[in-house]
Length: 276
Image 1 (spheres, rainbow, N blue to C red):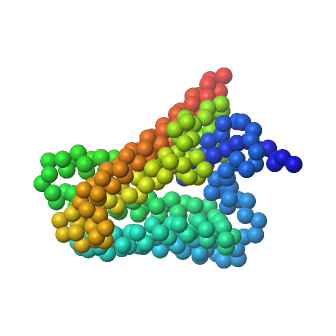
Image 2: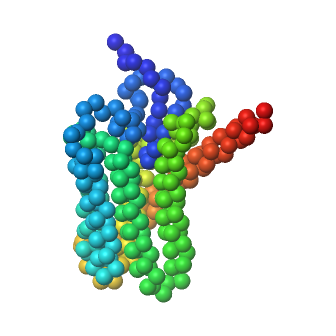
Image 3: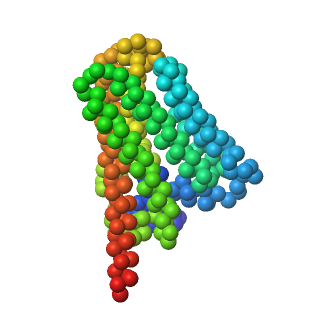
């Protein structure tokens, strides 16, 4: 017996959902985190703010800030290890949410905030350390890192506004008939379980961490990466991560532009209706 047919949709992370209008098997249907929360049939009796995955989210934010304080106090090894611990917790909160039946929309938002806060404090720490150098290329480098930070938060704002649009499940509701480019599909295929997806995730997290280690600890070499990597190998790893981060930038730009163009298209339609 064949599986029921549903409209094919793919979650592009942080609230971005693309629908191409085609009919495919249920196994191809990918729920958004919000749908997972809505479809939970047996909610936990715990208060939502005390759900285990949400407690992990709070801890991730605390660890991120603690790592930032450590970085400010020139404790590069402690800062790096603390941030890595915060990153590893991200691997378990989603599992805990499903296993303990503690999915929630608040948890989805908290997870996104924890991710962004972690990467933000790492990038800022890298910027602070880089500004101590007399390298002529520091200005260009710091400007690029700052632009990445701004784009990350812009993407988050667009994605959350996307979910909050009154009368629309998502912005694609007023942009029917369009689908994501093949390279976007390639990145998100099988929940990032693809070569482009792996490269993008690698760049998303390794680029800020590598930039900080290079800027803060290249001379003293007190952090553990220097115990397993030569300077040339570390530089190659960081540059490879920048390639992945550039891929993320392209995806983020596409998501933001699509959302903004959707809003403009919607406003144009509303304006035409009022003139009739």
